[in-house]
Image 1 (cartoon, rainbow, N blue to C red):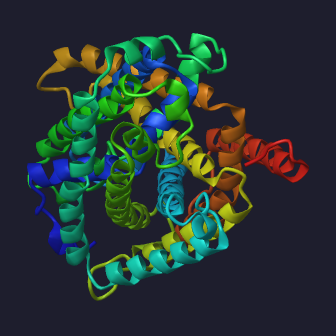
Image 2 (image 1 turned 180 degrees about the vertical axis):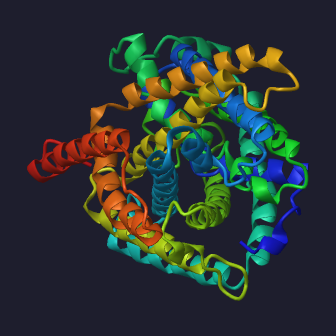
Amino acid sequence: MAETSAGKLSLPTLTAVVVGSMVGAGIFNLPGRFATATGPFGAIIAWMIAGTGMYMLARVFQSLAGRRPDIDAGVFAYAKAGFGDYMGFISAFGYWLGSCLGNVFYWVLINSTLGRFFPDLFGDGSTATAITLSLVGIWSFHFMILRGIEQATVINTIVTIAKIVPLVVAILAFIFFFNYAQFAENFFGGVNMPEKTLLAQVRDTMLITVFVFLGIEGASVYSRYAKKRSDVGTATILGFVAVTGLMVAVTMLPYANAPRAAIAGVGNPSLAGALELVVGHWGAVFISIGVLVSVLGAYLAWSLICAEVLFAAAKSQDMPKLFAAQNGNGVPANALWLTNGVVSFFVISTYWSRDAFNFMLDMTSVTSLLPYLLVAGYGVLLARSGVGYEADPQERRRDQIVAWIAVIYTLFMFVAAGLKYVLLVAVLFVPGTILLYFWARREQKARVFTRAELLVFAITVLAGAVGAVGLLTGTITH
């Protein structure tokens, strides 16, 4: 982005960035994903865990924005400050790659939404027709963004407002038709659903909760454009509270309108199917239109974030300097070209996926967990060091406890994800390191790894090798 944009973003605008980044595709699939996994009781526990963990992470972002105002490149810069060059690269690459996979998910959701009305053409979102439409869309957005960031941000602001409307209408409809007896029947699991332990029920909801909270760091990514540095943390908390309320309502209310088995059986996007069970076909059409508007807007927002992360990482020498170049309109063009090339590659790969929708959702969640873990870890280190706490040292203990809770929560998410996704993420991190990190270090004539970093890379290579063998032999499927 052009440096002339610096200092232009107010608190309401930064809050809209957070809300716009978080309210995207995932929220429209919460009813079906939760109903497949658990009833209202398990959902309440899951949201308490996810809400607490993500709130603590939001508090870490808020604290770091105030304590280290000199760090203005966002997520990966905290990892670099706390854990060195390679972990800074891993954080930047992981965040960028997770954002790319999220963009793939958006196109799968768009096409699966169209598949509700044209099943022969679009199916579950991974047919040849669906992939062709996705590629046309990806590159149409690409060339629009290349023409200038201003028109893209105007569209994003309009879409952020427009996509809230169908969610509010759905919530009001669910409230109007609220059936306490149905809610009570579903509460501990409902009928005609497989028996699972409560722990298994909660675990199976964890990755979708991570996905819908992605974007909580949106204000941090654009922190160098904020009018006031303190607005970054405030916008993060305001956006978190507003969106969490929407997500919990969208998850819980359908349980009071239909049997859990019926909600679990609807197609994607499941909010459309859940509303159709209550008000009829017009509800599915209305939500589907909202999904298309919301997801296209979220895709635009995340395309900008992808390019910004790669651009900022190149500016700080964590990525090859090629990606720090801007075109005449102030757009990080090379970063955008690589981003959309990678998104296109993964879109094409969905043709061979058994469940592209949920696979891309889960991969996005797991890939984004590592940057979050490193941010939380840096929050612990900073509070222990006392840097930035000179004026109010009494807050160090509180911030350290908050950061530790965020660390524990993020580690729990890795466990909940399962080994399969961790290994698949490692498969992607190995070539990313070899192609991009080695390139950047060679440009700087700098030492590639410290001893500790070499150990981290060796573990990543081993995990990647296991994941690759699993894919080739069929023991790991997607």
